[in-house]
Length: 396
Image (cartoon, rainbow, N blue to C red; front, top):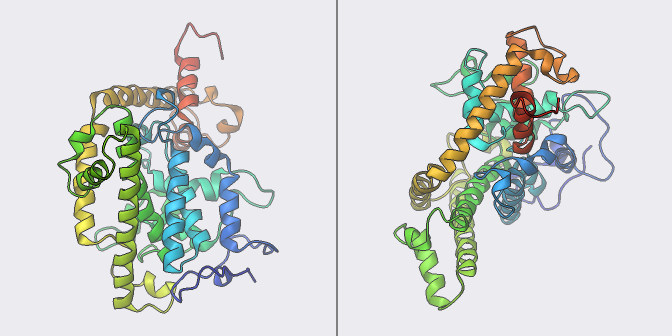
């Protein structure tokens, strides 16, 4: 039997000792709970290491201080652990899901994903959440007994459903990305219910991290100013409070202090709202939380509106800023040209990636090329594009 996590004290926490297990049976660890073991497998995976050079908003070479997928994932994990600790949930499971939630992202952020999805439109498409499942169940080749990482049921469920049920009244299983439908034939992840509470915490921790850290990165990059933020409810108030409390404070410290306050206030809001929902629902287990008709971990209505206003501002002033647009335009061309070339000439793939292809422009070849490109870092994609498309580059 798996060890228990004494920090998971709430009756509705997911219990490591009661895990539904792994697809492939393994002996339990003598020193770690099932979820600690999952976390360690993710940290040691190749996909996790590659997050270091994958874009959050800015391509890696634009500066050392901007967030990458790796630093973002670590920040999400810290927030998820903090919230889980206060609520008496399993911190290790929340951390595991936070660390793994972006494994399926392509190089160049959402621009790369959009380009790859367009390339795959005739071959069942591309979705980064489904790609995360594909990575941890199939594409990582580290263990002698199985492909993937053989993670616990609870971790796989949380990765697939952290944003809510994927089968709804408007969506059936045939509408889902192929990676999900394929895996559903092997193991039932109960796709029509909510995920456990730790996965819901990880999803909100992601929102808290990227909204606030995009404020930091956007200010650092000069895409907007503190004055531009003053009109935003909640955000403007936080900056104004710091400026009034510390007159004459240098701008970099104003930014850090304000963002720190914003993160703290959002965490406090999630904890208060979640406690109220738990008090109303009175769940007696994590399974009870899964069967509710709504998420139990949530922002308040007021904070939800503040976040929507902030996201609209960031979309308009940062994600669609002309400097970001120029960079992402180049990124889309790189992904599109790499896919077109490798799909038409699969013999250009490294030998291990040619395995499983079905010839020029085949559907299996498309998926292998897609997996190859999706796993690239920004750095590798740029270099591979030069090697294959720049006739003056002598490298093969």
